[in-house]
Image 1 (cartoon, rainbow, N blue to C red):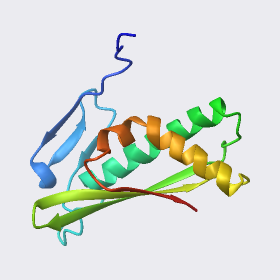
Image 2: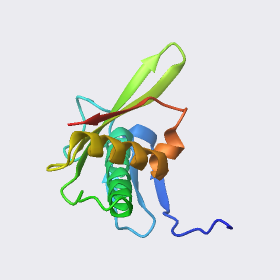
Image 3: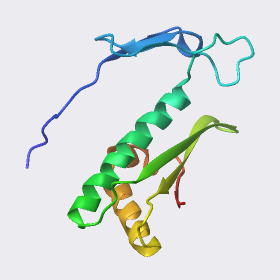
Length: 138
């Protein structure tokens, strides 16, 4: 099978962590500030928050997809992503904890579902072997 591009997002950012970012079509537009910046304007965000939102949404889509394949009801699944900015001897990196809640599902079934979703999620694939991603069933 030949790979087929399903969608391409286009964004632009200027000024780094103290700048402005958004989608080229204008659907998203926001000012940026470093995490915990004391002089940050209200309403600013940072790359870690944006990555957390994207990963949680993408992982939720993977959970939905795998649940349908496994004929499991995960319609009430909620994904909370904690993305940490880490400074170490090798410079800066990020780490992720995905907290997955699937009310009404047996823990063993939920664990298998989350593991399988982690194998197919595009964000999980992109981060695999690059950063630490911890999965927690809550």
